[in-house]
Amino acid sequence: MRKTITDRWLKKQGACGEGRRWFCDREEIDSVAMLKKLINQEKYDRSIWLFTHPATERQNVGPAIYSARLSLANYEAVYPEDKRPRKTIAAVEKWRKNPTEGNRKDAESARSAALSAADSALSAAHKRICNYAINVMRS
Image (cartoon, rainbow, N blue to C red):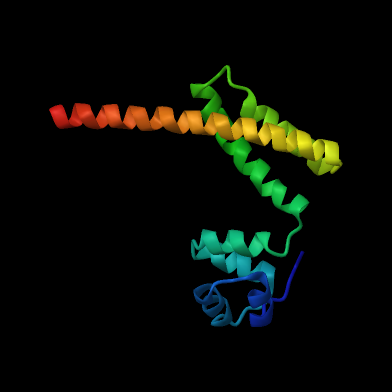
């Protein structure tokens, strides 16, 4: 997945003008070395963009699964009975190991359920924040 970063490649990938200028202002053209620089400079949005663009769909799923696993314990601490996110991770991992159309459909179905869970969690969080704000304003 190592790539040589050029302006031509950046254009082909649909990089924005600012991003292209930033990349082209650097002497480094090796994607791995560039990723290290981006991370050291805390330019995480650009590092994720650079990682995901030359990668395949299956390769991109790895960081998504990793990220989901990082937040899973926090979610399940608040919603211990809701297994939708865990089932989604399992379905996506199954598709990643064996990318059949059936596994893709299962993963998409699980993803829809997990998005519904996330929406519910976000709504609950918004309600708590609003109630907190009301209490702060009263005092």
